[in-house]
Length: 306
Image (cartoon, rainbow, N blue to C red; front, top):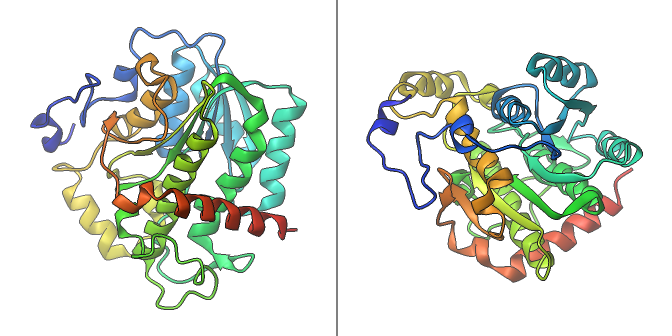
C-alpha cells in the first residue's frame, strides 16, 4: 500500500483510495454473471478478471491476440472465455463481437479497460491519431456492437482518467483528429480519455428509462504496462514516486470492479467515479451537445472503416 493511501479516508460508498478489488467485492456472489473485460492479459484488466472469477463470475477476457487472452485466462483458473480484440483493428473488434454473438453470451457488464497512453510521437490508424482510435473508436465499435447482448440490468464501465482534464480546451478537436497540429502526447491521451467519458455520458442518456447503466472511472495513477510508451525519464519518475503516491494494481482495479458489480452502484448512471466514489469531472464533460456530436462523428468514422 502506498503511503498516501494510509492517510486518506473512505468515501460515502464505504471504500476509498486504498481499497482493493477484492475488498469491494468481499461477500458478493457473482455466480451466473458474465462480464467482458478488455485488456485482460495484464495490469488492471488481469486483476479485474482474477477477482471477478474469484467471486464466481464468468469473464470474457479479451486481449490484442488470442494467445495472450488464452494465457491470461488460463492463469486465473476460473470460468473464462478468451477472445482476441485488437482495438486498433476494426476487423478484430468485429470478430470479437461476432464471437460473443455466436456463443449467445448475455453480458451483465462490459468493462472497457484496455488502452494505450502517452505515445511519444504521432502515430495513426486509419488516418486518425492512434490513442484516439484505440482508446475511443475501438471501444465505441465494441460496446455499440454488443449493446444487444447486455442484460436488462447490464452495466457499461468506461475507463477514463483524471487525464481527461488535460484534453484540449474544446474537449474534442474534431478538426484535428488526423494530421494532428501541435501533437502532444498527454494532450492527445487526455482527449482520448475525454472521449471515453463523453461516450459513457451519452450512452447513459440513451439508456434512460431502462435499468441499464453507463459510467466512466478514473482508476488512479498506477505503475502498469499502460505506461510502456512513455519516455524513459517519465517512467523513471513514476518509479521513484510509486511507494509514496501510486496505487497498487489491486487498488487500481477496485473502482472499475466496484462500478461493474457492486449492488450499491446498480442504479447509478452517467457519472464519473474515482476511488470507488462519484467524483467531479471537467465541466465540459457534462456538455450533452458535445457528447452527441462525438457519438455522431464516431458513427461517421466507423461507417467509413474497412
